[in-house]
Structure formats: C-alpha cells, structure tokens
Length: 80
Image (cartoon, rainbow, N blue to C red; front, side):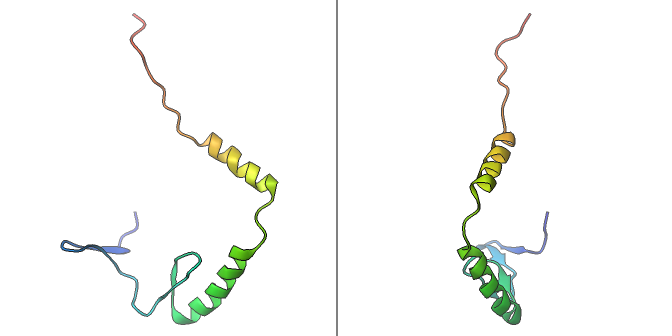
C-alpha cells in the first residue's frame, strides 16, 4: 500500500498531496515538475499518437485477459 499519496480531510474527502507547482500530463494524467513536464508531455504525446499495436499484440492481450479471468466454482448441495 502506498502511503502519503493522499491525505484524508474529514470535511472534503481525500486531498491530493501533489505539489502545487507540478504539471499534469494531459495524455496520461501523471504529475511532473516543470522541467520534467516539458520533456515528458512531448514524449507522451508522441507515444499516444503512434500506430496502434499490431493484431498479434492485441491477440496476446486478449489471451492474457482470458487466462486471468476469475472463475468462481459454485457448489450445489452435498454429495452425501
């Protein structure tokens, strides 16, 4: 568990502890200091506009999702 990311304010709910001078990336919504934000935002913009993943990558993601689905075993009655 990450501590210190959010502070709890009883009246207003969780309050972010991100410094006020940090800049939020419009592409990934992460926060960066002013200098790092300039570098990151241009990089992140380029990454988000790249050609989508290949069909093979998409198929691999779908296989992973199907393997990691939670399957519940339903028990009905007893075998006695």
